Image (cartoon, rainbow, N blue to C red; front, top):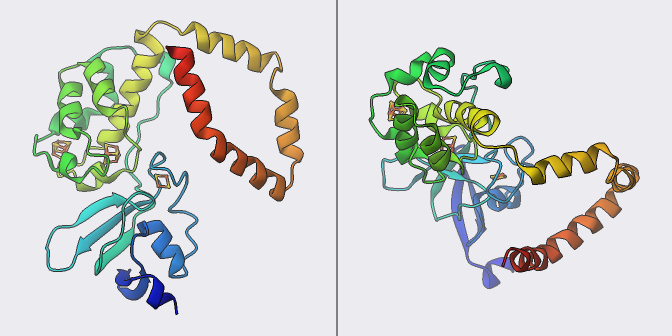
Length: 240
Ligand code: SF4
Ligand code: SF4
Ligand code: FES
């Protein structure tokens, strides 16, 4: 019996109780329970923000947010996935937006409504200083916004919780784009790589991938996973 080998714990998914093995992430526990998670899951590595999940622990009143692929389940967790947040996103052409705070407030005038309540920071599953980057955006300190928001996974929770109805993550995205386009000098490495791509350097590999069947793609993916550590070590050596 599975229960004799692995400790099973109860969790509740959208109000329904399931017994699942202890130690799983929310995502794996949901899959163990029989859910086929397609919309609320992307990278499975804590990067894409698609799997954000709302949960409450038994006996507490707080609602918490976590990434389902990273957060480990606890007994009697009440869970609900929030795979998409229809937050406001301004439409712009980045080359026409100038690197100043007035263009940011023209696109997102609600920025100035921030109450500095810190609710966004408390809700962020990446533990970012969201209020800090919103405050930096208000005073036009674009570099600080980039520094504080660079690890945002765009899950949208800060927008869900904001009482002033801001979409902090989309404001920060605009500022990172402005910064990348108009403030930092162009990267010679990027230019070189774009030249290689346009010159067809990777075309052969792309064509091979396009023709590959599912089994071959899976094999390549597993090979890539297995050698990721070695690649990182090689990259580290190159940088030394
Ligand atoms: S800043 Fe907002 S969108 Fe970005 S990770 Fe935190 S809560 Fe999610
Ligand atoms: S939750 Fe909204 S109002 Fe509160 S600090 Fe964050 S951005 Fe400002
Ligand atoms: S699936 Fe991408 S962050 Fe969880």
